Image (cartoon, rainbow, N blue to C red):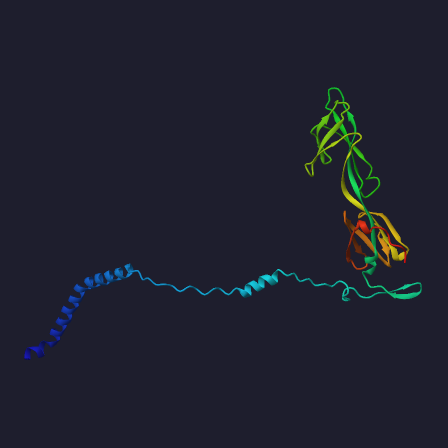
Length: 273
């Protein structure tokens, strides 16, 4: 007992050292055993029967898509008065109610005529020893002034490009061909012309209009290049565009534009009121 009392600390320390050494010796085996267990768990296939997901509720999305296909337009035209106030005018000394815009409804397009760009064979310059030059006359009916509407002749050689065309072929005698083929630069189209058979294509239009409430006031042969406005119902308008089926007018007082469709079946001018 005396020995234990004197050396109990050394005995305890020895036991701890021996236990620690044993743990250190056993640690690799413990790690290896744990790793083996982990590998076995990884190789085990857990089979489960998953439950099907509930069907998606897309009713809100379908409703949104259906609503997006429906166009909604704000109509500020007649009979609304916000941008179309009622206007009173005098006629025969008596006032009458004339809503803005009704005068445009009464305007009638009686005729729309095309203005052509014309290519014609004006002559041939065949000089011995020199390439034959073909005189091609071009006339622009839609030009702004009468002077610019006069035909202008340009003499060009074969396969020479100028004024938006190229002479690509000629039929008949060189000094007096029966026809000449042109290739138009803007469209690539090939057209045949002769002295008696020009080629024409629309490049603009003129319009005849009438306003029946003012004793069938007529505006004949109006062009979009005209500087003079057309005036009726105490308002003046400028023609800004003319197509085959439509005339677009701009009101001078407020800058509002109007599109008048041309209906050939109703083009006769109405009788005076």
